[in-house]
Length: 285
Length: 266
Image (cartoon, rainbow over all chains, first blue to last red; front, top):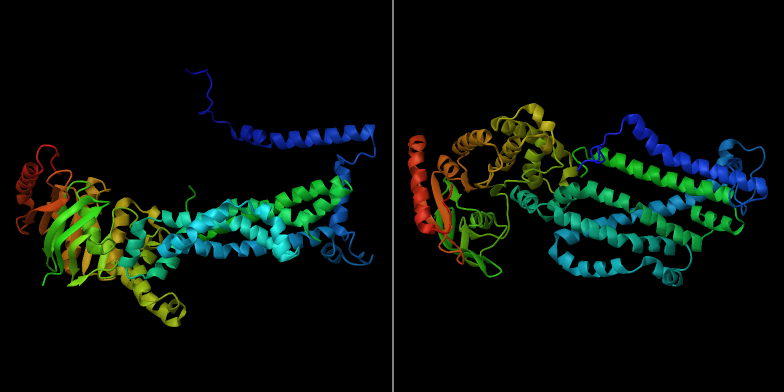
């Protein structure tokens, strides 16, 4: 029975959709600003909810001034010099380096998954082990990694690799298995060999889906990266957030959190655009 | 010696028999239609000739040899997934010659780019022969209709000049008009190239229109595998007028063979 109005078949107009989609942002920001103001009225020294002005000031210092542990830049240096010596730049650079390195290490995982899916012997050799490995909670390995690899870069990269690689391997494996048998037989009947089929037929077909699967796992990569950085590091965005917590530096923590979200969004967006540009034939399901 | 020889070929999946004691000789240049109902094992027989499956009993020889895996002597056009979705029409057609003449690393030699231009010319020629325009060459398969896709798939298979062309329900997903066009096209190409064609279908009319020979596969009872029940030579000159009579004959034959439980083919 109809209630007299449509729910599933409703068609909001463009302006309605626009207003609705921004509403929670506006409401959230307004509520925050209001709370911050109220708290500052009763206690001007409040550190839990910094005002927008405080956050802008904190962020300007992060962008223009070096971190506490570094030496001050000379007064006379140019803007570019100031930014490149700044805390934010230093942290972003350190985190990005680890991030890119771990993404690069996902490539062997893709290759392994492809071979497992295509070559029965490789599959028989690795599949059970990867399935087992996938169930290990990577963070529970962190102490072991610190003991074995020390507390420097290697253990952080290893944490990401151990945490995300099994998922990527299994995803690629399943995508490879999902390629219709006809395609493989067809390629053979046209004169292709095993490795032609692997790299020229199957890999090319699953590549856009693999990229999407990596995109979905970006958050997991960041999660493990941040866990590693917060526990043991001397730079990086998560290290800074963890450090600032000790003196309640909410005026920098909140902008840092938003900055990380923005960076992740931009990485995801650029991967999506690259994917679409490289694979014009691919239709997202 | 015959090009394809099936000697008492049996296939069973997990002890369920599919084919039982198939004996078949196919000569070079024949157009053989394998006819039968869904699940009678006609596609299985095709895959045996293709080499992607192997008999569990008996021997299947192509050119006197037992098969290891599919190779470029036998072209293949399935009903679905016949084209590579990530390649354009032209790349799909040239894929065979490129891949068989230039391995993974030879592609980076200058000779490859010279040859590729020749391949493309030849591919465009095939494209025209199957009735597509040159403007279609840069399209991706999913931008084409089902009939167009199968035309490209035929061009793709013929480009490597296989001795045998194997087609598995290749026109079954097409609408009747397109299907007739494709049948005419396939007959013409078969005459022009002299390739041996093996065509699997469940449609009696299609089998009689296309083939010079129709082999019917059917089971005696559900527990048994299929045998070849009927092997019919179709004379070429009496094609059109003869067909209604032949359809009736085939359907009667299969009805009497299959007993009451199984409805007639066609």
